[in-house]
Length: 212
Image (cartoon, rainbow, N blue to C red; front, side):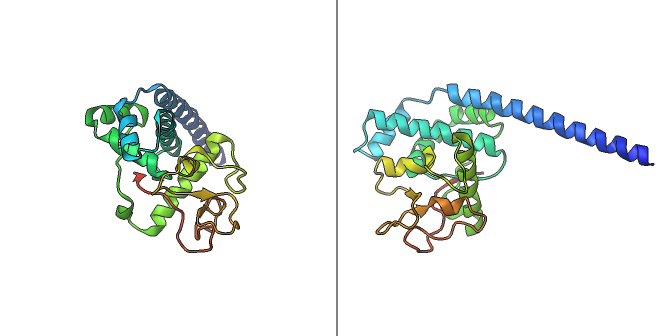
């Protein structure tokens, strides 16, 4: 009986290792597809139309953000990833309008169709908070940032502020800064949750639509 239990445990451990190796290869393959995918040029044009103060270089930065969101989703697997950037969300929505291209991209690069539910469609506030925390940790992991003690913001969490997006989500490392009403990035990485912007309100984690 003891030998059988040992063999069963070893077999289970081998299967687990093989699965981890397989999943790592799948993620790497899909990451390459995301990195090399050519988005329709009109998406950047639509972003500039939505935010006329942006120039072509700014729009390209937004497209980098869209690519990064898909990379973060790839890393997160089937977990819901909330969208930390309003301007990238606009680009994502425009991409979805290319229905066949978007469906093909999702199938090849993500292994599933990534839906775009609006923020108000989140089942509960907790699910929205979980989604932004997943986005934060995956973004930090990709950029070599400690999620619990960040010294800088990942791309998706700084774009709206950097590009001065009027209806954007703004995050801050310095959560005690006076006169600021940004979302506190440091709180997102804490196990206690995402409560409070930097001004001490209860505005939550920030972030809009999420991919399920």
